[in-house]
Image (cartoon, rainbow, N blue to C red; front, side, top):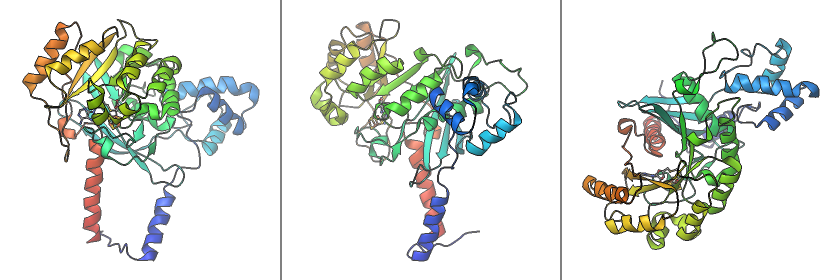
Amino acid sequence: MAVSLDLTNDETRKTLSDKVNAVKAPERPNLIGMSREELGEALITAGVPEKQVRMRISQIWHWLYVRGAKTFEEMLNLSKALRADLAANFTVERPKIIEDLLSKDGTRKWLMQFPSRGAGNPVEIETVYIPEEGRGTLCISSQVGCTLTCTFCHTGTQRMVRNLTSEEVLMQLMVARDFLGDFPDKDTPQGAIVPEEGRKVTNIVMMGMGEPLYNFENVKKALLIASDGDGLAVSKRRITLSTSGVVPEIYRTGEEIGVMLAISLHATNDTLRDEIVPINKKYPLAELLKACREYPLASNARRITFEYVMLKGVNDSLEDAKEMVRLLKGIPAKINLIPFNPWPGSSYECSDWEQIEKFADFINQCGYASPIRTPRGDDILAACGQLKSESERLRKKEREALEQ
Ligand code: SAH
Ligand code: SF4
């Protein structure tokens, strides 16, 4: 039944804001996303005797991250009383899935809703799964919106809402594993795990919405859980964190997280990079490339990826290609050329295919692998930030229709 809302009326407004407040975070914290230490502290507050805590942590860790348990009821090697205590104090619930879209090319995209934290409204996050020959990559978001304003990026035009919590970052992987069947089913004997080669999600890229290094602590916590060998066990060599160039946190990423690095380069001189990747004004190319040279995990077997969005007439000349090769000298690098994905209102065009190939050939001749990223999931708007704004737009339309 259609309801007509009079938003000029204070009473209606109050009722609405009461409703919005009513959907705030559940009182019970979610155990997913807590480090082992935090989990231990949580168990103590729930009354678990101190001498049992270590054992309980490893049991629960196994249920959450190896078995993919969605309720405490499933955790059969915990006593009934403990399960009831845990359920009274905590949750292991998944977020609400608002959309689950499957592209013709197999790309899949989920839009999930998390309850508010404190006073804000619930937030929506998108996660994209890209299956390829022999592997499947999950593209995870780190923030809702982004404080940076790269001129070619749709997320950069959106209002920054907030950092995601470690629970929310990690939950994107949990949801993908749920939907893709990467957790063993209930009949699999206890202790059995889905071996790495049988999994659908083999790789993770932090390339969704937001700048992961502006949410360092939560991203670190989530990635350390994702790569924990007794749990989700995604190898750190198969996790890539993409940054627009937050130099101090690049050093910390190498030391404290230990995953692979991708840099959104996009320009080969400071004048252009200042304009299209504005964080360059704070951390110019020389500082950025120094951090890459010193990245502790980089080697010829573990190259740093340099992402380069191809913008027609802006950064796609052979001079740019030449300059890129000069800049990256001495860094174990691979270059990922990304055809610009246009969005309504953007002022750029994607370079001509011929030009992208010329650019790629030049870089190849200089000894760099330079794959051109094939656009995926076009029919489900799988580009950075697009599904979320599209669904917001649709809902705005629905709301307007309601209000008429
Ligand atoms: N904030 C991080 C990670 C998220 S963006 C970063 O900037 O690296 C992931 C990648 O998508 C980045 O390389 C980004 O520059 C690129 N990107 C953003 N908008 C794009 C668009 N419209 N077309 C093609 N690539 C885009
Ligand atoms: Fe933010 Fe990355 Fe988009 Fe730049 S490219 S606005 S850093 S999400």
